[in-house]
Image (cartoon, rainbow, N blue to C red; front, side, top):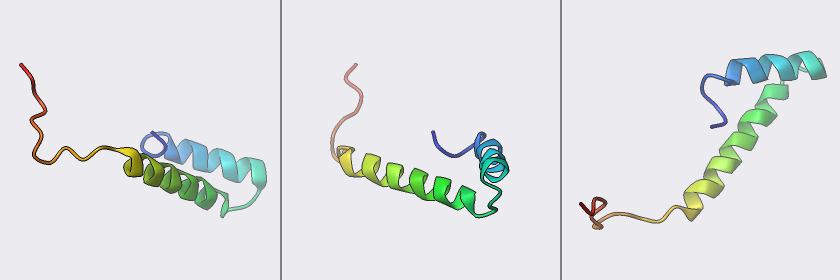
Length: 53
């Protein structure tokens, strides 16, 4: 979603736009916070049968 194949492109873009080599760190922190929020809202599936067919 946030990271993966697009991370180098976005990191290069942020450095180019801001002229700050630490700009990608903010992007990575944003992605980490987004992941933390997503994990917080995911329901636990331990002990639940996932297939119904």
